[in-house]
Image (cartoon, rainbow over all chains, first blue to last red; front, top):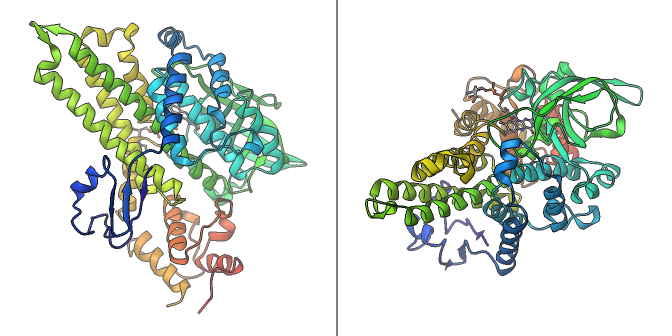
Length: 422
Length: 83
Ligand SMILES: Cc1cc2nc3c(=O)[nH]c(=O)nc-3n(C[C@H](O)[C@H](O)[C@H](O)COP(=O)(O)OP(=O)(O)OC[C@H]3O[C@@H](n4cnc5c(N)ncnc54)[C@H](O)[C@@H]3O)c2cc1C
C-alpha cells in the first residue's frame, strides 16, 4: 500500500503531476486503480496482510470493546478490563520491537489497524487513550530511553500492566507550551521537581508519566527536559478525575509536583532535549490518533446512511430528501479528503521523511471535519440524534477534543502559514 | 558559497523573511530569534541539503545556538567538508 515515487517524471516540486497523460484527476483515480507509467507508481492499495489485520482489528473491536459505552460515558468510567483485552490482542505493542515486549509492525500497517480500531470500537475515549499511551509515552521511552528504561517500562506497558501518560500542559502554558514553569533543580543523585500539569489524559490513573520540566530556565525552552515520573514518587500527587464534555471513558486530571525527587536514571534523554522529544512524539501521535478518528467518521457515515434509508417520513425514506442526502454527501467528501491526507502523512512517516506541513494540514482538516460531520449526523437523526442512548450526540462531544489537544486548530493554521513563509 | 554562508542566507531570508542579517556568532535561540518551528525548519533544511538525518537527541541548544556552532557540530559528525 501507498508506494509513491515522486520522481521528476511524475511531479513538479509543487506537487503538480507532469508525467505523460496524468492529470491531477487521474491521480485521484489511482486511488482505486494502480497506475504505473515510466517507472512512476502511485499505489493506494493495501496488501493482503494489511487488509487481514485491519479486518481482525475491526472484528476484535466490535466484539470485545463495544459493550456498555453509553453507560460508561455517562458515569465517566475507565474500564481496565478493556485495556487488558487490548493489550492481550497486541494493540499496545504495535510500535515496539519484540525485544521489549511488542510486535513491531510497519507504519502503514499500524495506521490501518488504528483506523480499524476507530471503525470497530464506538468508545472514542478508549481509542484516544490507546493512541496517547502508545505514541506519547511508549514511543518516546523507546526512542530516547536508556536500555535500562526500555527494559523497565516497555514490556509492562505492552502487557497493559503499566499505563502511560504525557504531561506538558500547565495552567499558564497551553498553546504557548514551551513557556512551561515546572522547574527541575539538580540535586545529589537526581532532580527536585516543582510545578503543576493540567488536563492530563490518564492523569488520575497513570503509572508512569513522561513529564516535561525546565532544568535551565536561563536557556528558555532549550532548557526543557523530559522525565519519567512514577506514580509512587514522593512529592507527586494528582487531582481526582475532572468532569468533562467528551471522551468521558478516559480519565483526565492535573498532576502536582512538590519537591518531587526524581532520580538521575529517570531523566529521559539529555538535559535540554525536551523540545525534540515532544515534537517527535506529537508528530506520531497526530497521525495515529487521527487514524482512529477517521475510522470513527466512517462508522458515523455508515450509521447515517443506514438511518436515512430506514427512517420514513412523508411516505418515503428521509434519504430521498435532498436536504438529508446532501448532508450525507458532504460527510462522505470530508471523510475521503481526510483519508487522503492521513495516508499521505502515514506514507511520509513510513519513508522517515518530515511531515510537518502535512501533519498540520491533516490535524486541522480532519479534526474540524469530524466536528462538522458529527453535527450533520445529529441533524440527520433528528430527536434520536439528540438523546444519549443512541450514541449519536456522543460523537460530537468526543470530536470537540480533537480541535483542542495536540495543538488547537488555530495553532495548526499558524504552523501552516509560518511554513508558507508568512 | 560555503555551507556556513548558505545557512546564514537561509536563516535570514527564509526564516526571518529578510528582516535580519545573521552572523556566524549571533545567538539564534536566545530572545527567540529563531523559534522552535523555525528551528525544525532549519534542521529540515540541513538534512535536505546534506542528505543526512540529524538524531532527535542532538537537537539541543549546545549544538544549535549559532551558525558557527551548527557548522562545528556538523563538521564533528563528518558530514561537512568546509570549503
Ligand atoms: C481531550 C484533551 C486531552 C488532553 N490531553 C493532554 C495530555 O495528555 N497532556 C497534556 O500535556 N495536555 C493535554 N491536553 C491539553 C491541551 O494540549 C491544551 O488544552 C491545548 O494545547 C490548548 O491549551 P489551553 O487549553 O491552555 O488553551 P489556550 O492556549 O489558552 O488557548 C485558548 C484559545 O486561544 C487560542 N490561541 C492561543 N494561542 C494562539 C495563537 N498564537 N494564535 C491563535 N490562537 C491562539 C487557542 O487556539 C484557543 O482558541 C488535553 C486537552 C484536551 C482537550
